[in-house]
Length: 443
Image 1 (cartoon, rainbow, N blue to C red):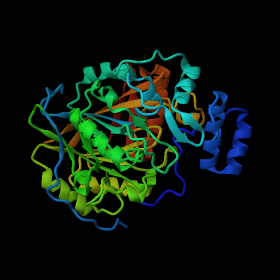
Image 2 (image 1 turned 90 degrees about the vertical axis):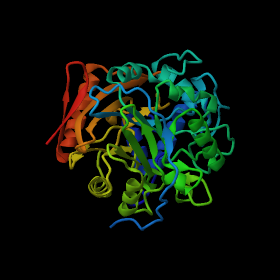
Image 3 (image 1 turned 90 degrees about the horizontal axis):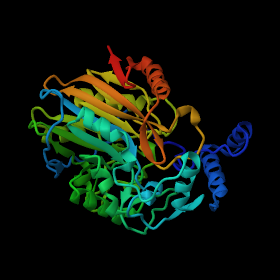
Image 4 (image 1 turned 135 degrees about the vertical axis):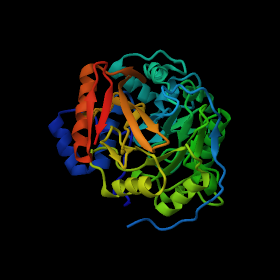
């Protein structure tokens, strides 16, 4: 998987402060990354902001300790099946952290902003005031009722935020941080597993990562994809179900999502489990070492660019071979700011990009054609005994005032049509139900 030549600046999504044609000319002259920074800086200044083949083999840490969450009562509709809740990037830092009961120091170190409160102001200017502080359950909004309705057996998110009081920012443009006292925002949604193999978990250097791991694990949340050493980073999170089954979550970050090479965990240093530098054979060995009969295995992948529906051939190759040869049952992809096409390969689901779920991007325009304000809840139901997907339904939502609201029928239709279009080449289709839910068809 190749390194992307230019990486994202998440908060710097282009703002059309003048005419669309002028911004397009500006973008053509500056290049994508500089264009994004300039555009977001313009929005923040308006609020008083400051402009400012296969990979090589790696060691297999057999027997590495796993992060485990204990069994809780299953809400599954059929005791023979397992239903997972999956979503894309959950960013509870920066602006979101500022509206929660225990905000961090709002100072940030971005070229275009010096205070996280500027992102709160942008959201309020776009959609109205946010009564601060909000309850820990507030950001999840209508998603909580949907979680209760479905009753998934396991709830898995990509947490793209450091949970730390560290004041040592990494040498990069964007830093996400949530105060550890705000971790109830995750337990309010009864999250079981936080995937940490992403390009923000070391935003506050290795001390910030160590504090993140300790805080989440003390709160009863399993973690995957990052650790105090390589063995812990490579080990799966294990979610024990009331049925006696388990969900194993292996997580990997790719350089293509902006994760620098020096963030890789080693035998001596905390870090992330990196996809580049490992092999399918090594991953298969990790799965075999831990898997028991009846387990469901998820490979959670933080990979690829933020915008665009194209799926690189390397991603499809990785996904197919992990399903065919490594004992994986579900590919949970994220990094893209919008949902991407879905594939069912060998009877198993591949979510190439789940899109953003919670973030503080309101009020920062640009790339409107991708509808980054819309989010999806993915409910994946599997038959572990047959190793096959049974059903995949999705609930469309829209973020307003840092809170998830049920999407309108028109917005749900737009998402369904988009996924239907993008899935055509992958052999899938998407139907809109009368109640606004989306259901995947394949075969």
